[in-house]
Amino acid sequence: MNKADLAQKVWDLHSKKGVEVSKKHAEEVVDFVFDTIADTMKRGDEVSIAGFGSFVVKHRKARTARNPKTGEAVNVPAMKVPKFKPGKGLKDAVR
Image (cartoon, rainbow, N blue to C red; front, side):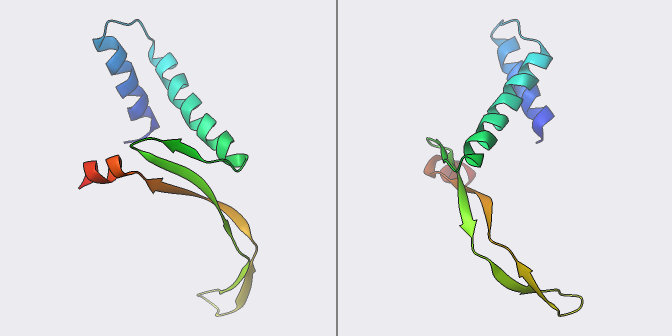
């Protein structure tokens, strides 16, 4: 499933309930949710959705890696990386 498929599901849900929503509006809602999660994580904050999971920012230390082609040492700087920790509800649903 991609973002367009998710927007289609949002539109389908509202259409079944008799709510007049355009497909463009459904896409804007999905974009808004993703943008809000990304903006919150940019600030270094966690996004926690009960029963689904948490989006967190982890700090990866600087390290020395090896170029697999040449074997040459490469310095990898410290960086922030996004992580997702699934919640119990999601884990149980997938099992």
